Length: 235
Image 1 (cartoon, rainbow, N blue to C red):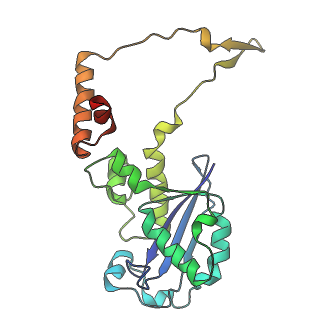
Image 2 (image 1 turned 120 degrees about the horizontal axis):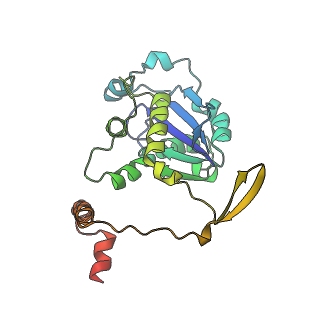
Image 3 (image 1 turned 120 degrees about the vertical axis):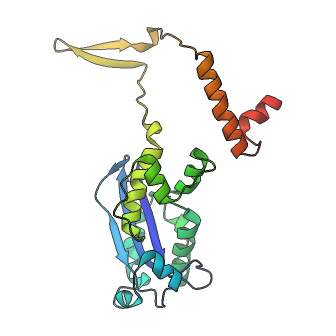
């Protein structure tokens, strides 16, 4: 499974109002492992950044003057992203800018090139309802070192987000064993049928059950009473 963690920096907040991409950072994950096959561009946006945007990314207009325009890096970027799952924090923002740049070139939208998009901000809000879920907050919460992040930068932010994503989805890496597995004993491979093994069922204690109920109540409050399990209970 090939995944690309992607981030952009822009001249402002609205692609529809003419703001442009100035930096693109991509980090490749293959089977959830960092490969080092990253991609990074600075892009000449053909316009100046807004003052507020400059305070965020610190990339001066002068620095970008001699950088390639988006049309010059589009083919390399699209070839790199082709068929991959994109992982983006607040995906609608970055996708809207990329699609606008492609539209200017007469190219089809990004969805025709990639496999799918996963919005890590949506994931974070589901995992940590009611809490701050910006990249810095998630780094602090999940123990990801972001001490080098004094300003926003597309490649650095993509690298941090890759670590955050892996931490948020670590539970998906549960070690699942097949019904049949093998062990080596005395140089001979022995097949073990795990379906014959009876596993003990350990029920939650009263204290654990109450703690679980307290968590559900907190989640229910965060969902404003629309939690699925509460609706099922009413039904």
